[in-house]
Each structure stands twice: as C-alpha cells, then as structure tokens.
Image 1: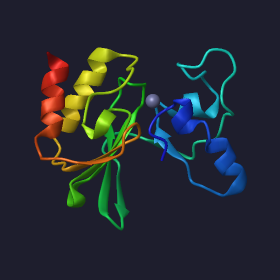
Image 2: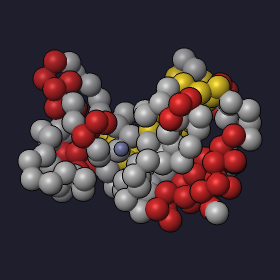
Image 3: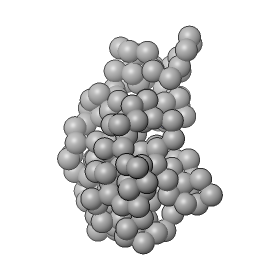
Image 4: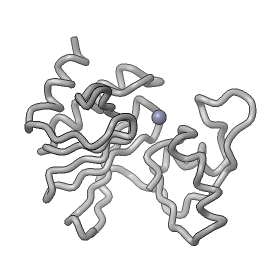
Length: 157
Ligand SMILES: [Zn+2]
C-alpha cells in the first residue's frame, strides 16, 4: 500500500518488486507518479525507479484485515492522491504524511504541496474515531479522541 509518491514512500517499490511478488496499491491520482507516467513532483532531475501499481484505489475502498476492516481515506495536499488508512475497530490510523508527530505529538502535514487541501484532509481525519496514529515521520502515537480535532483547529487558524 503506497500512501503517496514521495521517494521515502514509493522509492523502494521497484526493489520490492524484484525480490517478491507484491500486489501494489496506490490511489489513482498517485499511481502515475509511481509507475513512471508522470515525474514525482518533489524530485528534480533523476527519479526513483518507476514501478507498476497493480490496483488503483479510490476513497472509501475497504479491505478485510486481521485488525478488522481497513478503509482508504483520500487525504491529498501533502501530495496528490495521498491516502491514509483507517481501522475503525481498532480506532487506529496510518496517516502517511497527512499528519506527522515530531517529539511524539501529533501535528499537521509536513511540507504539503497544497496547504489548503492538506488542511481539508486534516479535517477529514478529524471526523474519524481515532486514538492511535502511526505517522511516517514520527511513530505510533497514543492519544485522546480529540487530538486530531485539535490539530485541525490549529491548522485552520
Ligand atoms: Zn511525503
């Protein structure tokens, strides 16, 4: 599951494809950057090796997992086609870079390409029932149910 096109998230997919037989998922607005149809937006010059995306996702796609249902949440702004993954039974969220957690405290996205859209995505996440968030830049953060709402309120100021 590729959350977005940035090199630290999608750059190793070609390597994984060489070593295993993964089924690669990415949002349909992200896939062209990963598979080589478009150049990754934050990379000047040379890009990471392009890699096939097997399944192009849209918001609301749901998967059965051992942690209960997993829902794809479209959270663009940090990058086009960015996704987060929501596990309602576990009240857990994999935020990708839609949120980050410097010093273990939840905060808004780091370095969004489109600030306004990124803030809207934080508002989308604030509507979910979440008490545990895995941020790519940060770690797993256990928090009270209103923590993402507070990030949204700070971001909207
Ligand atoms: Zn990123």
